[in-house]
Structures are given as C-alpha cells and as structure tokens.
Image 1 (cartoon, rainbow, N blue to C red):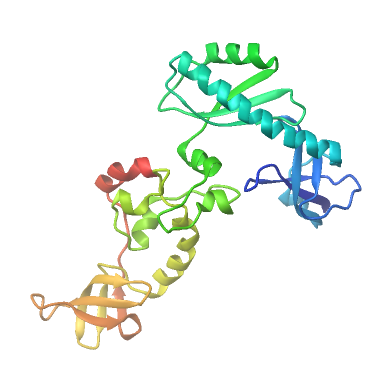
Image 2: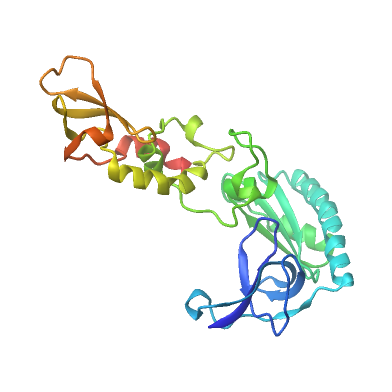
Length: 287
C-alpha cells in the first residue's frame, strides 16, 4: 500500500499520482512537482489517500512543495506569455508557408521549454520553424503534432447535443470507440449522425455501451429465430430501449411483421451483430 495524491495539469486532463512527501493537501490546492516535461504547477484532483501498490507505478515522484503565492503568480504570467507565443508562431508559420494549424501553446512552469501543439494532414518539416522560434524565445522549443480528438479537447465547443464537448468538460482521457458499438446501439451508420465535431466517432457511444451490452443479453437481435405466441418467426427489427420486436412469422412470410414484447418470445437461435467489410472500410476513418 502507498499514500498518493492525484494531480491534474489541465482543467480536464489526466490525473497523475505523486508521493505527497508528508504534506496533507486539499482538493484544488496548487502544488509544484517534477514531471517528465520538467517542473510543473498542478492542481490537486485527488486528496491524500492510500491505494494498492498494483494500481501505481513505482517509484512515485515526490511533490516538491505546495505552491506559494509567487508560484501561482508565475503560473498566471506564463498563461499571458503563451498568448504572445501563439501569435508569434502563427506569423512564423505563415511566413514559411507551412501546411499546419497551430492549436495551443504551453510554457513549462520553469520556462525551460515551450510546447507548440499543431495539427496537419501529413508529416511537416518544421525544422526551420523550430530554429526561428528558438531565436525569438531563447529556450528549448518542442513541436508536437496532435490528432483531431486532442484538438477538440484543447479548444472545446458545443456538440450536436447542444452541450459542451464531453472531452473538454469532464473526460480526463479518451477511450476507444468502434463502429461495432454504433451498430450494437442500433444507430444509423451515417457518418454525419455518429461522428462528433472532430470528425471521429462520438465519445458518448462508449459510456452508453455498457447499458446496450446488458440489453443485448435479454433482447433478441435482428435476424434471431424466435418462438412467439403466434408461432415461429425471424426478428426483422429490434428496439433495445423499448424492448419491442417486429417479427416476420414463418407461417405468413409475405404478411407485415407482427409486433411483440421481448418478454413474450423465446429465443430459438440468436443472431450476431457484425460490421461487414464494406461498412468497415467506409467508416474506418471515423474510429
């Protein structure tokens, strides 16, 4: 067992564990810690607690100190520097006619490094840009190419549901989302309807999947063979939420499907939900 605190470096970012070094810290306290990027100022997201050794990677880095008023001011000053650095970098990109889009700029707390995050369709030769920026800022420069999901998380916005992006408002980390999830949830495989503003599959497919997985255990799938009060038939449509089925009876295959509740039928042979090769090829870029 080990005592930890959880520290977050962005408003809705991943939480990292640190050794509290004997300090008792409260939620939202600012702390100075050593990270792979250098010295950083973070915010306590998880107060002191004891966790199992299996849930952490040893050795834990220790916090340097709780942040002082001077530390907090320095962190705020860095935010102002980032705005200036952003404008300068955008200008340099235009001058060098580079096919890239600057998304965000971050100063490390100790000012020993500036990170520039950008998106681009392919590889970009930014060696000349790095030299230009280094001559302006006289510190270590690092350019990082990020994906469209990371861009959406950094910039934020309003989703098609009318609410702020999940990734920007509360999701600390991205989770894998697949085309199969959309199909299991009975959604139309129309890219416009199942993709978010970032152009990738909506993150909400993931946290709704557990409910649909449970429903699929009790509701026959489309294509399943079932025994109904009116005889044997094939499920041609299944509404998982309402648990209502439309069944084409074998004794009258040309008639309109009959509606039944899932609890009123017995599954003789269930079907499998699969994404065919053509669908996968057409929609793979959304994953």
